[in-house]
Amino acid sequence: MAITITILETLEGYYSVQFPFDTPVFDILRAIPGSRHDGQTRLWTIPQTRPTINTLLFALWKTGRFNISEGEPDKNSSLDSPSAVTRIPPQRIIPDRIPALPVPPDTLDALFKSEARNQLVGTKAKDPQLVSACRDALRTLHYSPRTEESYLHWIRLYLASSGKHQSGHSVEPKINAFLTNLALKENISSSTQNQALAALLFMYRRVLGLDPGQLGEIIRAKKPIHLPVVMTRAEVKTVLSLMTGDTKLMAAIMYGGGLRLNECVTMRVQDLDFESRSIAVKCGKGAKDRVTMLPGTLVAPLQEHLALVKALHEKDLAEGWGHVLLPNSIAKKYTNAATDWRWQWLFPQRRRWRNSQNGLEGRHHVDETIVQRAVKEAVLLAGITKRASCHTFRHSFATHLLEGGYDIRTVQELLGHSDVRTTQIYTHVLNKGPGGVRSPFDVL
Image (cartoon, rainbow, N blue to C red):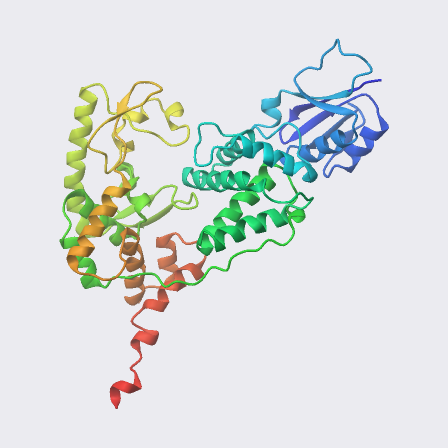
């Protein structure tokens, strides 16, 4: 006789599993980590996690007695048909669109081959189901857009090449072969190789639900220690003197506050506090907020700049536009925030853009390439042979603070480093240590 197992979301953080008494199913549920049985309701509850639901569905599917279906089972089905496992509603059970049927390790080859046949590497127009599931999982976990773009790039390449490997139960050889090919033939750096590995581990762990312990030993590239490029105070002054307009102001902020380029161009009006001379960095690298210093000499130039930006914003409002993109659900919570002066970009673009969804026009923040191009030209005009870039201002900021005798913990907080060991790299380029020791050759 066919039976139906229904998985419902009844309690926050748990799924409820309903089914007529069946000894094999009872044993499967009892073996699920974290499962509990309520004697009064006669229901089983399991933790609401992807590995848990994957383990349950795979165990049921492996018995050969069950099919996985969405929604209500077909009441007209024959009793001789396989039993059904129904998930109601599927979008609540697995919100990140993870594939309905759990993928056992010995069928990964077939999945990858089918994905590779439909794969358009480097495009997003026709992504296969697995790539789409990875994208939804990344967005559900609030990964940054840049991380999402990078991860999906490596996952696409991996799916396109995985069909060439020999079949096997372990995915370790596949990952190692892919990473080795990147290192030997593509000549990628160790940091890029580790990024590709992180993307593949995300796909296996978060989407396919494979236990990390099944991955075995993965070859990880050793990241070499590179000293940061640092400009002297005189070089910074020369480069800034050769820049003009908004790009000069942005370069001065990056050096004066130790900001990254993306943190600088995405600053909003409300992030500046002239009274306390501070800059609030919102959602920096690693989705971390911090507060850094606002140089006193930049107060007057920034106030003049804000006056021009506000006049431009008021002109846009008078013409019926003036909307700006807002993070998360701010636009739903505060309906007028999109036109609020406080939420406007500190460095808006010259031209307006149109939102294709609602037809509203607004201004995006200035593109990073504009600042990068201006800094590159100024470095060349200054005759500096170092490979200086926008990020060099941040390196110079940290190094010059340490040279000035400031505590390394203070510098760590200003830079937003999670580990002080990251900040300690700047001690290698100070005018102390090897740079402050006089060579015996000079006293011959």
